Length: 176
Image 1: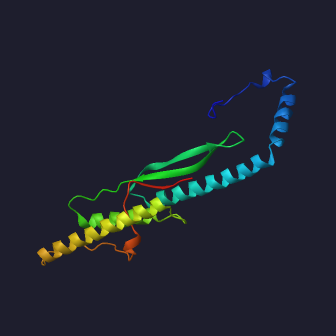
Image 2: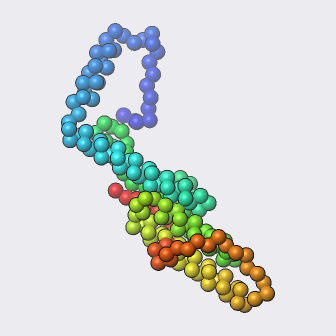
Image 3: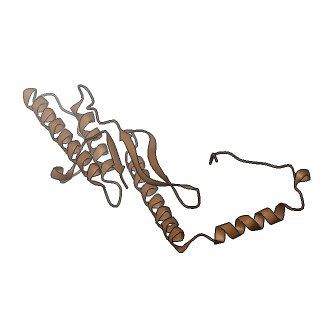
């Protein structure tokens, strides 16, 4: 059965035997094994964790996130689909000719990668690459300042970060 299908029946065509079908369905629902109930609880919890994780990336990554989250699903014993993994695509390219903008973008990428409560190893890799991009942008800014000391380089909104744990990548995700 397609989970996206909906069925509607005009009220005038519902027969008197319809409630019996409903009670059979209710009986089937109550006959779910304890093992199936435990699996459902685990799937529901995982679904909530995955969606919150990807939502944190999206919220913190405004401006660098491309589209929304993509999820991988598992069908539970109740026939419903539950998210068991996900990823968010981000733009990790440098801003051509503008090291200040590149620095700000690197900081945004790093914030997005580390936004979830429990960043995955992929998230940490992305944060580390973003830190490297930020270091390179700072070096380019310093080079510009040193080559032309009379020209002021606009200040950026720099935050102190542990640059050894920051990064840049194409996807930030959580996997099952």
